[in-house]
Image (cartoon, rainbow, N blue to C red; front, side, top):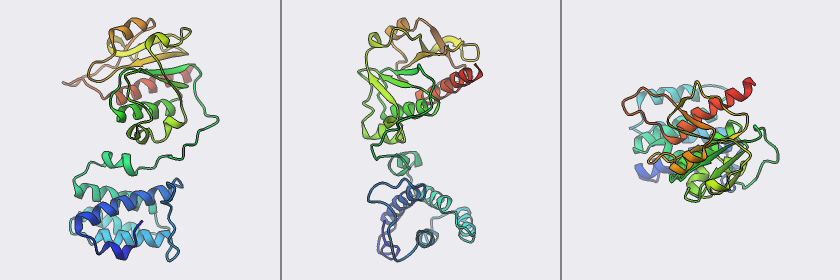
Length: 271
């Protein structure tokens, strides 16, 4: 983090970028998951006072919208100070001014665990797994892990041509979930023989009518090609489809997998 007085020496664009990064670091510190070396450690002022000081710098920016300025001034007047909300609003306003999509910067400055720690015990549904076939985008790979962990998958399998989950962008978009989930790279033929296998693909049983297994492996494919013919052949339990009504009838693979896991999770809980 940079001292507030030094920010005044920076030109406008550089100042906004530095402030956006600073607010991201503050958010992580507020949540108690600051990255090593980026913890708040100024002895000359409290973190709350620092948040106030850098927020006032943002309020001097002529490109900050009137609505955001009113919201920030209102939050600054509150006691206790909602540090997290203030930092989040400032960061997103700065990214908007910079013309950067927040999602792109989230992968750099959003809170996530980078300590390399693993969880010894977590809640999951035994035998509930996903096989990611040839997903090329590290963002989608990370998203799949994040959803799998949140919705109770025991394990993630990935195909040999899938992007490596250890890739930095996959790690960041997973929000640390790759570190807590068991995963294995394998071919379709190497998937466990004792678990039913089904695919998420068009042309199958509507998701509302699909009978989810208590244990099993769901195969999801790339957005460009879908699942392979070999995957369809391997999926002896069946094919599940998400009905859509839009003209494009297209979903991001991470979103589609999230919808499927919610339904599978719901089915398992009802039993």
